[in-house]
Image (tube, rainbow, N blue to C red; front, side, top):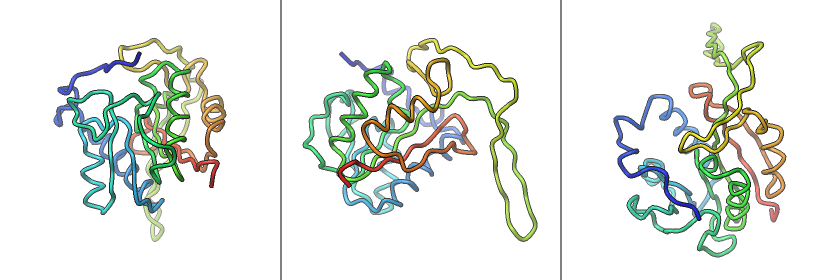
Length: 209
């Protein structure tokens, strides 16, 4: 049985919304807007910032969470979403699936694909050590890039009370995660946020497209 890991105070704005998380939030909204959905379901809304910003952008977003204190539109588990098949154009979950044991996270993603009519957008923690470089080229602009740190050791993952696994920890390499998720939907792209490399985004399209 899935139970909540943190209480509502975890999402206190001053503590939760770092500058890096704001940059990741921009990518959340940008990726969903690019898909031009009519209806969106967000799994694990946290403090509700994505839904609020999406509303300003003209998106209709409903939320799902197991914790009624977060005031989701639908109370329920992501491993058994209490909603009909293909009822949302886009289903998204940002930094959510790693809060489940790995096999359960795959069941959750399968449920998300069931509810999705077209696309899925998710982000997951990527623990691979990188250096960030910013390069300014006259007349062309400013470019950010991430360079893997040479000789960085792959670390095992120990449950920290919230994350059961993270990408590029031992046994959870990116290739494996991408392959396992692609059993349920077709991956369009994946990338890390240059301003917040800990967050890796994935965009999928449903097999029924």
